[in-house]
Length: 249
Length: 196
Image (tube, rainbow over all chains, first blue to last red):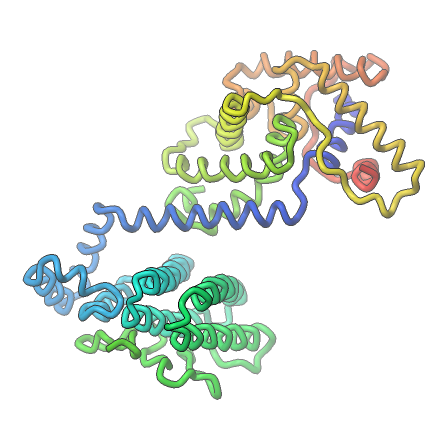
């Protein structure tokens, strides 16, 4: 080994060619956003969607009923499953039912689900769809509760949820600025997110927080009408699929 | 790796964390501008993300595969922008902790290395960037450059000899230049870094 030259080259690389911390952070954010977008594109692709429907058909009789509904309603079914639509609650319930049972896969799926609610809120706001916005944000709040309950006392999961929520708050604040007419609903979602951050921080700090099976709605911060109505597993009762969007019409 | 291939964002984030400094160093050594290096490094990982499901290990080291993407990205960039592959002085670090004499000496040393690198051939410079700046093995560098491992070793041997000549170092020991040690902080390196 030619130590002298090697040392000079390594020193050169460290001094002149290395990214600083901010550059690393910027690049990471950009790349992870791209990963997220790719995942969404993948999820929205026609073939996986069909596969998802097949998975859902295994869930049980209620799913069969929805399939029949979707077929009978034809194209309107898809429209109805958008935020604020008649089948939106059904769709959310189905999504909950088909979440992976446990582990990292469940955590990731929940993160993706919450991201999707924020995206739906953004799209609804862009389309001036107040009902859709309210429904998406209501579902967002409920799914936060579910994710919080599932995270239990796992510090990694809690930290992950914390990071996700911080990102969502930034998006919602942007949404708030550009949509003053829907300020109340958006501000409520931001408040709810901040409350959740406080609960996570409390749980991370020590044993004083709630236990891992407390499906949200802890003392003093339940968030009123948007409070969780579902079990820790985050599912409503079959036949009451609209439990996610308490603010939807 | 398997999790990242299946779209696991956290797994891909881990890959980014493990490789981004190496990729950035390689790219920065080829394009000079830190902002271009940042953009291109992002692009490399976005391309890697898209291509990852098609990556199969079959004897191809992941590092080599990733740096082949990086190399192609740099080549495309240079071709598009008609830039020269020159090593330019990049951003310089804070020099608060070192005295003026040390700062000047270290800066001179770094400039000498930069000038010495400019005297290398294109291939030699690329091998040095892959082996010493990015920390790749000879096999990975060979994969990245689409060459035989023996060719890489030969290029590196000649590059080291040329660098020694340019830096005014004794030529003894050139034949032992088998490859870089893993990227690691050293006292000298820390001093250079502080003074750069």
